Length: 291
Image (cartoon, rainbow, N blue to C red; front, top):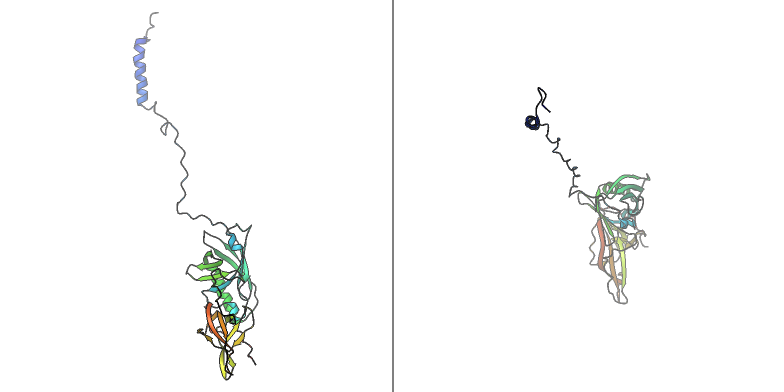
């Protein structure tokens, strides 16, 4: 068919069409979509910091026992002045595996309770301490105030060989053990002659006036933590008493064959100082002088 006037033949149209397509591509009509075509991969979540502390788990050993204070950086204990021993009872909230709960006990005079939390492995913090408001002797009230302040300052704990150690940021230490139990490292009792006597004594931090052959100063001792104080007249070989220090000692007594009329029938010798701590020059509960 003959071409119409003004129309292009196929050989004439193709070169022009291809040139137009090339021009459009140059102008960006064939450009890839923004972002480079293929969708970008989703950003990964940032990795956790390698030094981040993980929350502490509960410590069943902490709640397995009550813990009696046996030594602390503050010096004297309430029983040195006629008070009740400090005993802590931990109760984990929601079970022993939980990392926090309540602690309660007696602080020498009043009963108290507080919240505790195991912050990181080996870390512990106490908060919101409250106590009853019973009035006691001034030394016990002073102890209680200092003790509760030191408890709230604690930041770390350790359990080892049946001993609970609490420590604050300054390095001050409180040591506890289960009431009525000796530490696992307690030394063996000494081997003695069949007729020898072995005694363990709590020695008060001050002497008391007494009368033997003449007026003198006697040690004040008791055989149980809550027992009555007694006057001790006989010398104890090897024991060098210092005023202001409370002791728990073990002594061995050997019968004296022919004692003098004004002397003891038993010769006492120090075997071991089991405990000692500074208690201040306060007078223990007065012992009844022997008649």
